[in-house]
Length: 142
Image 1 (cartoon, rainbow, N blue to C red):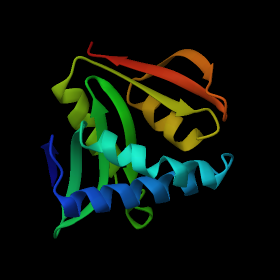
Image 2 (cartoon, helix red, strand yellow; image 1 turned 30 degrees about the vertical axis):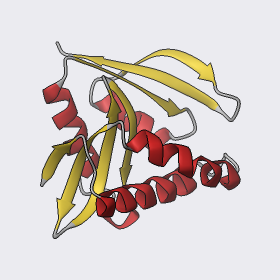
Image 3 (cartoon, rainbow, N blue to C red; image 1 turned 135 degrees about the vertical axis):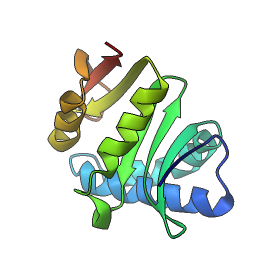
Image 4 (tube, rainbow, N blue to C red; image 1 turned 60 degrees about the vertical axis):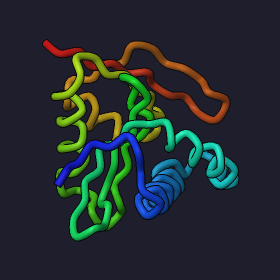
């Protein structure tokens, strides 16, 4: 079940943080893991300001999509729940609720980039954030 919230409980924050860290470590092996660990405190603060779409089952968050206004700041699915359509469902809900969405995805994260393109996102520019090359992507309601 997908729920939308602008305020995570402490339990939800812990789950989202853990999913975020695990997803970044496994999904971005081309970036030094120390970078992701160093980002945890700032990310926890940012999480308090974001809107979330959470996919939950039996009190456990299986995946989430975090947004700042119309920018998708992150889409992360627990490893054991990947390939079950959760990412697509979360993106579909965000598309249903918005007319325009933007995001950035690392070029080397081909699985995520292909998912976004499959759901109608187009590359608007390529950027170098100092760690790796990323695509800025946009989706607009037809």
